[in-house]
Image (tube, rainbow, N blue to C red; front, side, top):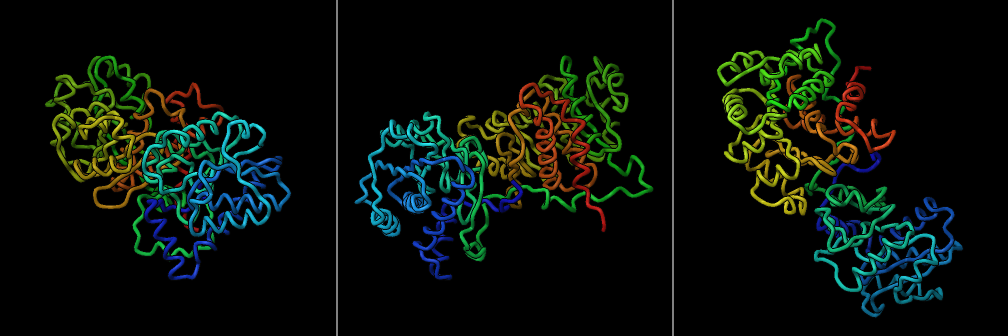
Length: 498
């Protein structure tokens, strides 16, 4: 999706940009509506070239107006167009009313929505609701969207799938499951996280000729991480570099029965470029870890005092993979907190942090929604209802950087803007995947990156490696499958002087 803009905006900001386009650049609403309908019609014909019968489901607002423009242009192009509505066209106002009148003057008709009519069409255009929807859909509106989803026909959403909250990506009762979404003027943040990605399908963008200056002074809700904006974070290794220059990592975790988590984090740290990786783990399996992966230096530690000497040589720490919340894990957690080292906090360490909150600027917290809920003392549903707000709240409360994992992972810094990763796939939902991410981020910290830069590069590298593995299918991926492609992905980011 790197052809898309970086900035992701709130719905209110895009509506304000519409108004500035009219007041400052003479781009009246009707002009933009005509451009939107024209762009959508062109994309419809490009992406669905075999479609001959098109159902355009129009709502009572400007999104419906876009639909009427598309219907008129599609009919002029020789397609058979069926316009369906759940609202009396008499309620249309302003530009939407003018768009309907233009459709009506061509002899076009509007029929009351019915499920049966959807079956006679090749593709459904969703022009029911735009970005202004705030409350859950009920009654006939919800039933219409559910019927569209159940029709078996591909859905093309205009600007945003109807029923999807434009800012948070949550579903408002029901939302269209689009195969394709064309967003206008400014990308809506909700398309890219939570349930947004599942409902949006392929996301494309058209600025409708509106100057970027309409967003002058507007802070985006988030920015997409792209290969382009990561360039420059990693330079080629000096020819005289030794392993100490490449970063020394200490991974703390692996209670009895959980050695794999620490090993995955350690191996990932090596694959992400760390020069030396040490595991501080339980004596029960230190020897087996070293034998399984000889590059890992595994020390068995019984308690915090035996752990202290390992801290001195580390440039960055990762704590949590397989740590547990028993006496052994709590003791090591307290020792890590007392160390003045950049660190990544994951898994059981996050749960220990939630039980006894503290704040610092040099750590990266990597919660999944369940751990995030414990950190904020709310439910998982609350986290998923507004992932942007949750990530921001964790960063504000605990300091440093929050990486809120999930569909559309978010990276929030207490002192800078938020970032979103639109790479990755459901195949990454497997045991140990988070441990691999922890290892990648701590390796980047050890190589000298600031926490926010290590987090956004690490998340992107991890997700991109997952996409490479998923090229052969998303089911059956092991976390260890990510290790080999990590090396290729991270080296693709290294900036070389021309």
